[in-house]
Image (tube, rainbow, N blue to C red; front, side, top):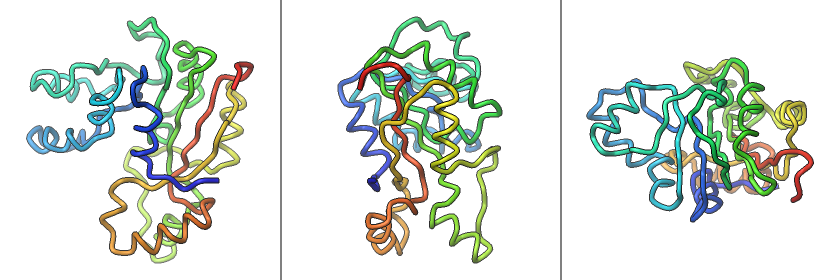
Length: 216
């Protein structure tokens, strides 16, 4: 099992490939000026520089702001629980559902909808906070744990694997990772050393899957 840097690992998989990026808009609660500056630090911005990427997000006002300001012109407005409604009829090398599955009310609908865009060699990357991760547990112990404002579910290795299997996927790799912002923490070096040795305790799950019945 590996302990990865999330953004670097995804960019390595995506480079030069055709990518569908679900839930790609961030910082939706910030003023437009702040959001525009931070947009250039997002995973979607980096993907746009190195891959042929189409994003999907339900935050219509933010998507329009990005288009008007010329930051992103490759994002479709849509609901990941209704991917069949998208005006998109193509397949992709890589589908990224980064830190979004914990937000959706019916994750099975998203997983079923993703298959429409998959070929035999398509890989799906899912990242989500790890319910049994050491960072979250330590925050809980000292009374500082706060779940995301829009989070409605929590996953660990076993139940995420079960959910994927129920909707026709096979897990190729189950890893953990850290977010880029973790590097700003004073204890990052110590934490990284521990979690590289014991990756099952990592704070974010990093799953690579494929549609069942397709070759590796």
